[in-house]
Image (cartoon, rainbow, N blue to C red; front, side, top):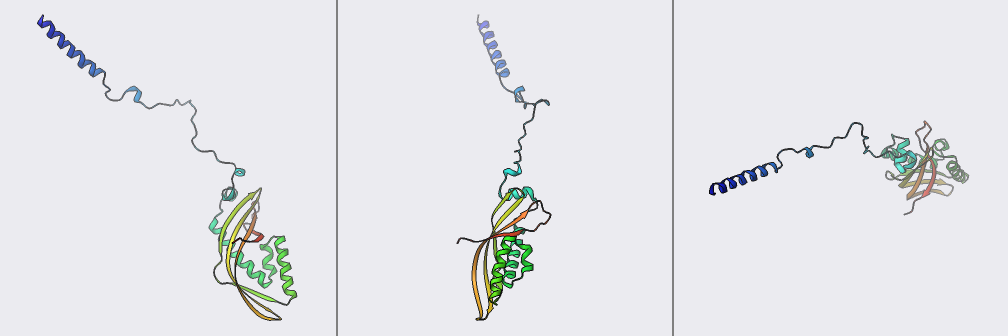
Length: 199
């Protein structure tokens, strides 16, 4: 009877060890393998769809039509155009102004120049410091792009008239709107509007 008890105890120990070994996770299990997507299964594209050009706005809309548009380069050109236009207007240089201005702006400049000439008054302009240009806004409507540039400048004008000579130093803050036909091969922008900027 005592031997049967010993054998039963040994059997219980062996069974426990066997259960402990079989019940333990050892190494990689079948469920650990990564899921394999069948070649025939459709793949989900994680890349965001590109927005159509008409859904874009501002600089993004402009770059969608003119991929080489660079803000720094544009503002540098706007500053040069501003200086050229201001000096040409003061000197009454219509030939320089005409290709830089829209017909409407040119007509307004022409009226002011003619009035000055009627008074036998001449004028010159110089910049005391380099004008500052900042891009205020960009819009694209159809094939026409418009860029509004905020310009801060310090200008000295010298005028001569029958009353004598005069010197005027002033600071200006303007919003100049430039426009370009995106279908045109001409890369130049035209001044189409001048507004006084709010302080």
